[in-house]
Image (cartoon, rainbow, N blue to C red; front, top):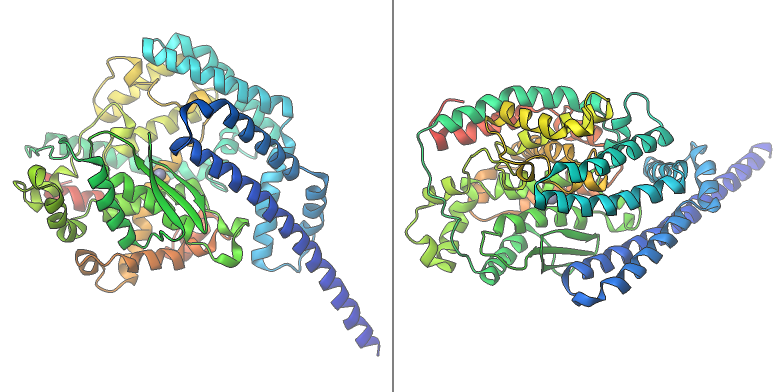
Length: 512
Ligand code: ZN
């Protein structure tokens, strides 16, 4: 009898706990709905909103973000988190949802509202000053705003708290559970090898026609791009491809919006594949986890690993174009009929050091990131001051690329990020590149006849592999843990280095 009573008590206890969790998750789902509404309205702003509707749209977004914030930091949310954090009976997935919401809750409750508002104000004034500074090619105009923003971000890091470095707090916003201690050895190993690789490629005699610098009709490209991304497995019943000034991906789960360039005669197919890579991640979560952290990407780096995998490892590969190049030639006979597959393959893989990060190729791109990462780390370690930024930038450009920017507009002033306080964001690009190759390497081992399949236009196996190994987990694991689970080791830059050497050696006819 006593045993039965105990059993009865346990049942009540369990059902009580479950109900607190159920209530919590119901509350979280409402929070996600508000976030989703903001995102959709933001998407509309970039795609279809009439030009003079900006002001009214600003009010809507600001009200929604206020409602979101109020709900997130509410007393009720605090009580749920307190109670559920003590509960050891939750499943691993439930624990992950509590852990992730707690992480966001803590950050939002620890930072004083006054500081949040000051950062927002400095960001909008700083962005305006940055635009002026870049136009006039005068860093001095931007300098006071950079100084202010670095100071405010240091205050923010103090408010949130950290074990080792203030900069870790900023990285954590984009690459959770990853710190300078994780990144430093990986990036310094990469730098040592990349600088000489780029130098050797530059010394090569091989010259390539820049075939892509011709006019390619935007609409024809979009149509061709849709065929490719449908083949990749992007689901148009749960997503769209529209146009905007700059391509982006927005939305998640059952409604994912991609965009490509509205105008311009450049070659846009890589951008379309890139965004579709992001889109497949967002469409790849399990429906039972929708509207919770288990239907969210691990980190920006992991998100970028997906887009870069499709853009570069598939999209700039010989195998992919073996299938698609004849089709592309049929769409653009005037531009491409006179060029062979080999000519085209070389043209899409030109390596050339440039001043501008966004124009960089697979081999030089990471050097741009290593430069910014090193500077950000030094700014937050007080090893350099904001006023020294242009000098340090130019020194590093010479050290990494062997070229020196003619002016700050193509140097330290080229990116908008710092004016908006986005420190800790840049390293996610290189982390993404490194993760992409390490994961791709494993996919090649797991999928039989992988390259043959790609050269026959069969892209679904890779999408399914990514669904099963990466997407379906959402935020259940950290980037480090998931990488270890999939590949047997944590992030290792050697895969990327090996990939670069094997790819560019034959193209440039050099020993790397
Ligand atoms: Zn991206």
